[in-house]
Length: 388
Image (cartoon, rainbow, N blue to C red; front, side):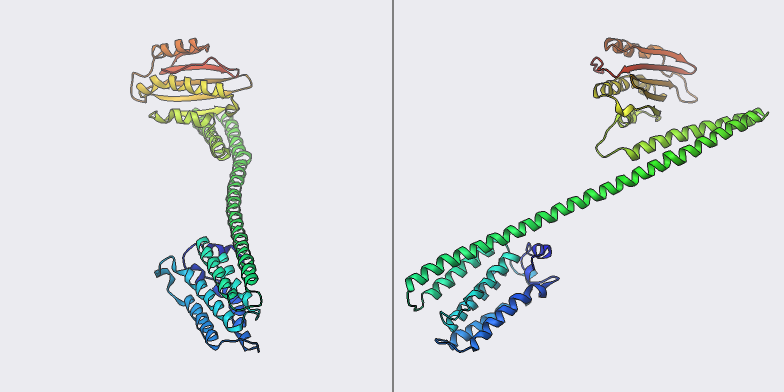
């Protein structure tokens, strides 16, 4: 009865009277209510036939409330069902007499609303229960003043206690469900990460090793042939395999990278996103283990150095290599095939001077068809630099 399903159904108006598990929720209350009405058949003094008839009619009206089209009714109407049964209990007590012992069934509407209704509905039922007990207590008794006082105090305290305790239980159930959902979400995330780590390990330990072995066999075959054309084709194939290995390593890094983890690789990719044609980027060594200052210096200088490359719409190759002491970045830029006027050594004069002000030596030298720019960022805290 105290299930998470019951709590969920109580959130919507009228949902306590419909939905799955309805009869399982209603049966305990219905059995007690029918037994209370049946107890009128027992011999006792002071019974009232008119009050007994009213009690039965109000009980039938309460049962009929479960058949109403609740989705089309106003949201405040569900409270009328427990209030109707409260009136039925009042008539039952008047019919059975003050000392009949059936008054305890007044807890039925109180517990029902605490379990399946909203808080303000429980307040209404508590007020109705207190009114019923006052009316019952005003009937003739040996010590009417004492009866009224005791019942008003005890039943009010009991009703408030049950309501507060039950609503607290519902809140704990709801918090438990939310915590369970969070744990399930975290479990799904960990499962995905485990799958990604497994795939990355398979690529690293199996696929890359097999490609590397194939490259070695091709190199051995190239050394055994006398045909220059065949050697050239084998050499080109080996270069393609080397490039495939680099791409696989980048893919493995992407699989192993965790959410919200923006390492040097991702930052470099973001800096190069505006270049067209897209540059060829390679990484070697523990580049993502760079200290924060060295990482910021590298990314800032890379963005500055790519300015001439972007202006000349040149093709570029970027290599970032890290070791235990420093990180070396090299850019080789050349005009696109079939064009002229790519970046020249003079285009990086300002960048070389700016790097010198930051305490970093920048080497710029011409290469066939273009220019090579290289600099070394120490892992110790470099001098701050701000790009132009």
